[in-house]
Length: 264
Image 1 (spheres, rainbow, N blue to C red):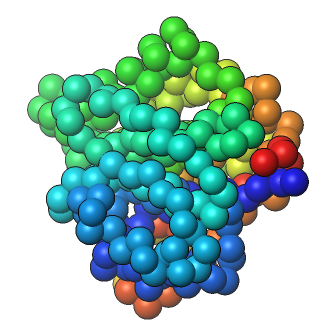
Image 2: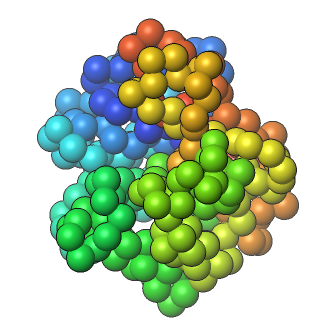
């Protein structure tokens, strides 16, 4: 039996509870991973999600900042979290499905506006975070695992609206893209979205600054679905739900989906 997973930076789960419920009702993924929940765990509006059949949740919360949650209509267990860079930020949570698959939900720092770690502590934190991902995956290569989340890096030239124009813009600088590629390769991860959609412009984020984001279409693919190499061939049906970016009072990110033909 296949299962479908979706990842979405919701930019406040309480503010956008209605959008989460709409996605669950209309698209019905088996598992929904949320980032930037901006809420302590006990204030996440779980009752409304449970009423739609999503009775399982693991989460790490933080007031006003960060926060990650995994909602599921399949049984799952809390598989812990990693305190990347030792900052105590709620940027990772893992869940174990009954079939032995581990789901990692990850939120990489945005990195601020200046792509220079010497003058921008936020960018330095981002580079350290990605380097720690690389080192951990190298030391403990994942198996039977899926990693999703807002990784805040658009790694390929066709993951941004204009490769040349964005080479000095945070999220697409060479030091970031090379760092993310190294982290992915160290873990033997496969980019499932690009496995399914190998060519062409592909975005999951559009800035709030654009008066008409849809017409301007100056997007970036910041949200990712990876799978460990041993289960990557089971990944199919990848898509980005661009329409959700146009919902009322939306997140600036769109949900990203994939299906895995694995028994649950």
